[in-house]
Image (cartoon, rainbow, N blue to C red; front, side):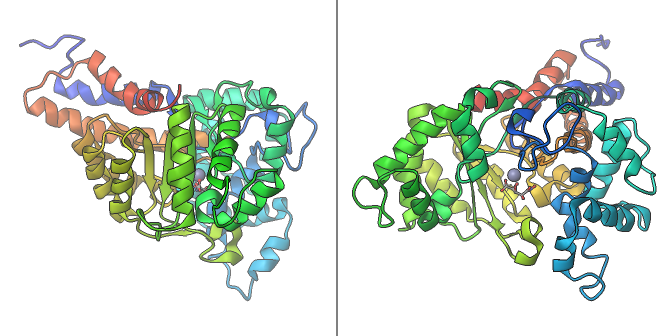
Length: 436
Ligand code: HDL
Ligand code: ZN
């Protein structure tokens, strides 16, 4: 049978797949990014806001907590006590990181390679001996222009935020002018509230200070009041889903206040509003507190707990990402058992080529395209460029292999179907599960 443009010969499927993956727009399911309405510390034409939440530019890129963890390994505690590092200004920290991780050594790690990719894709030479030239370039950009530029270069159409209910600064911004914070429809709000489940005593005290009639022992109107809080905030921010991270030790069922809050307040609120609940499980917060945000580590989650929750709440959609490599196969298998479970992303310490490749291959073999293979978890705007550049290449390589296997099995892999598959993996599956 002769090949047509719709049905390319096996030898041309590879370039076609890679081109389609490279050009398909992305909906990024989990980030910590914000538009300028949330305030930003730098940029042409804006009032600098040191407490602003929109992080962008070379100093933020180079002081990403992943790179702080790496630079502290380049010096002994005697050469640079951790607390002295923290006493440096952000630009002094950035200068040190640039010198140690990029000038004096080859930027081979994924977080370092990411900065190189980002600078190159922005048209800048990554070999500068200091950050001064980059600082001048970024200072000449306006935040709004930079967002347009970065989303364009990265091919990202929608960015899902992390809006932390217990962040006092962000909460004040939402209470002041929610319409302004929701104006840029490319940035989709998500209500995040770890403390409701993992630190109820702290959450209870905060809620009481906000005027909710809650008690630490969950007596009285507590559960109804937590439900009222969630109703108000899901509506106030227009949350596309709710989210929480959980430690490796989290178990369900288990007689804890957090699990009662989860099952008797949070999940009923998700059902009322038709929003999914994201569970991000396996983070060991502050394993080394001296490293601050860089001090979190990981542990294996309990898959039986995830399965039990999906089973007990069939009308709630669960978006699940796990931090430990050893959980990934069971997560994909569990998703075959529960149609309300969506595995998403190669989170944090898994966001490295060798693991993205292994996990994406496993997921497609077990779940086809009913999965969200990646999210970026970006904290700094320009990271979108490298995180998606790197992941697109790997996802493309895996798909080339899978289409080749399918072709060898006798299937005609045609361009329209390939485009439909890739669109679902990079955008459509996310849209299907969120209150788009
Ligand atoms: O809890 C989370 O959402 C994590 O992604 C943390 O923000 C973590 O610090 C991170 O930035 N990972 O990439
Ligand atoms: Zn995150």
